[in-house]
Image (tube, rainbow, N blue to C red; front, side, top):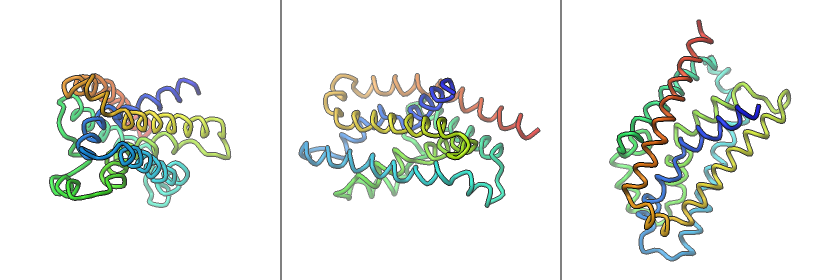
Length: 207
């Protein structure tokens, strides 16, 4: 169980990519007061948690209602994580998160906490797919310890994300754009391998 919790924590941390949020958050809140930045960070993380909760508690049931097997979703989730990993490795702006029209809308918004920070950057498709992949086989009734462990691991990742945004200015000066890209590329290599493993596990379960 501990091994599974650690694996989930690592994958979820790499999918959320809190390091990549540093230049993004600084760009979206450029020139704003520290109070505004803190408020946007707290609001973004809180809303992200609220978006993820229904997927954790009812995502597996939704898949069953739609007639989608967990193995099929595991294959799709693995492919999605692999695409995110490729974008991380090549340091490209994530096409799995925003489009060009959405980026233009970002620049006109005064409140950036809900969009684009909470969704799609923190609780984007990759994060929601990861939640479904891990919480799907686990139920609160039959495996309460594992379920609560996953909730705590996800909460820890969100706490790290909040800390990264609160410390975005000094971290940006230390890391720079190149440092953030190097960290994301290293994380992308690991995430890509985990994505492939998900596909293998899904195929194994299916056949």
